[in-house]
Amino acid sequence: MNSRLDFEFPTRPRGRTSEKAEAIYQRNVSRLRDWMRDYVRTLGFAPSSRGWCYALESAELITKGQFKKATKEIARLRKTGYIGFDLVADDENRALDGADIFDDCSTPRAHMEDWIRYALEQGKAYRPVSYWTHQRYYPIVMVEKVDLVSLFRPVLPRAVKIFNSRGWSDVNSRVRLVQEFQWAEEHDLEPVVLYCGDHDPAGLQISDTLKPTLEEISETLGWYGLDELRVIRFGLNQAQIEEGGLSWIDNLETSNGIDLADPKHPDHNKPYVRHYLHAYGARKVEANALIAKPNLGRSIMREAIWRWLDQDAVELWEDQNREASAEATVMADKITAWLGLLDASGLLYNPPKRLPAPDAMRMLLADDGEDD
Image 1 (cartoon, rainbow, N blue to C red):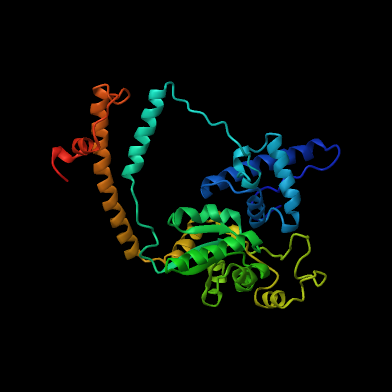
Image 2 (image 1 turned 135 degrees about the vertical axis):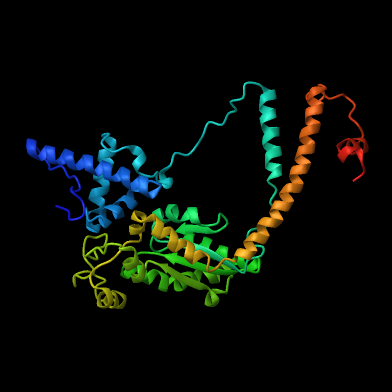
């Protein structure tokens, strides 16, 4: 029996099962469903299928070598109605593409009024100043697991970009990353990569070897600032694990089901593995462990990002955009008033064949009939 939870991950034996075995299975399914609901409620979002595997591993219900089996079982439980479809996030790579685009307004006039109202409201939200105009650094957040994107996004300014590297970044991801560096330098900003990954041999190595993986692509794209690029690993580290009481998983199993501590593993004798085993032993903490403690995870992210952002610059950015938006709002309100007069007089949708001269129109739109 699991030491932390009062149930086991449900597995149905092949063939016919006894009444007792079936009752145990149904109990485990029910308690798994309740646990998943509580987990989502606490977290604030539904993890992906892969994210659930890490959550299950962190709860010591499965090991990493059982990820494939657990994923299939969760899928089966969803298909048979035991687990709600809403408890697992959609896979964007497999989302349905295509849409039936149509307007649900009952008349052309209602349609036009909706769009006029929308245009005027958008016009009031005029924000001509970029968030980065007064900043010095351009931080980009890179995480090893997709669930951390959902976890961190609420505490990041909207202008800050975050992406899931999925372990070792693919070529397309690295190209986009270098292009972000180029954009930053074109706008007199210093790019910084903030990385959060697993506390295991591979996770620690990713942040240490990011620059070499970008070297060839950087040269191809004509960006030569790699030597000066800052790569900051802000998690997970041992202090955060101990402070947050995150659970160590007593194995270093990889996706092939073999433990890195096993001499039979092909990577066992590599220096980074040997160093890790000497420093921490055959144990690890997955970055997804943070989704069990969202306040801790978001606190770590908030502290990391604001080391590279200037609050005074943010306030100046807000003030400048607020002033511009206020000016645009005055103009939108004038237009709204004149549209109301034109509509009341029947001229908005049935204008005269001969329109006023441009100078006359400018006089009509002038404030109180006075010159600008």
